[in-house]
Length: 197
Image (tube, rainbow, N blue to C red; front, side):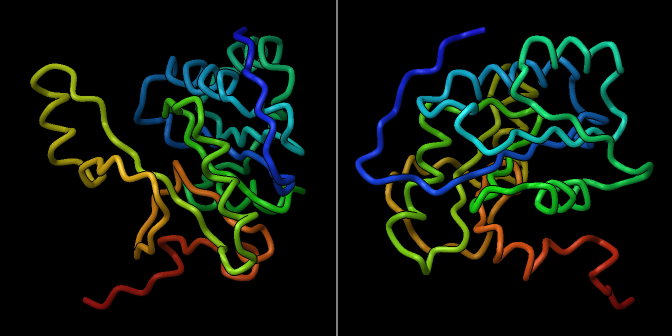
């Protein structure tokens, strides 16, 4: 297990909880989960500073693999989701279990840059009005298929912008919310949206 670099903020960061869910692994490579957890270990702000790191398992990780992950990453807390739970419901289950002031969402098949966690948290100490902070997500362009996916997938082209700006969208694999705000305005699920035909 890698050693996280120490990060000392000039101001005290808010308390935070990290939530990962495994529901998206039904359509992804199960081996991405340890890679994702390793990218958390390598953050310049250690995940051990979180109130908790919650792994909401929707049955997509074999029990033996979960046991290995608990041994290698003793700071994760695994919660079994009810059968049939969807992606958005798993995210909200994590928010309800979290105790940190900020809920940080990451996906179990994503790899995060070493300053990702710190960069999501710092804006919350800059203004009490900030309720949501989202980062950019990009798809790796490896080979013809990977390049095609990177150009056409739902994630917009990576802007490399380093300053905060208002946006009308975010992705739940790379976003942080003030927990009180999130519980007051939960993430809508497909069953919450009425589509007229």
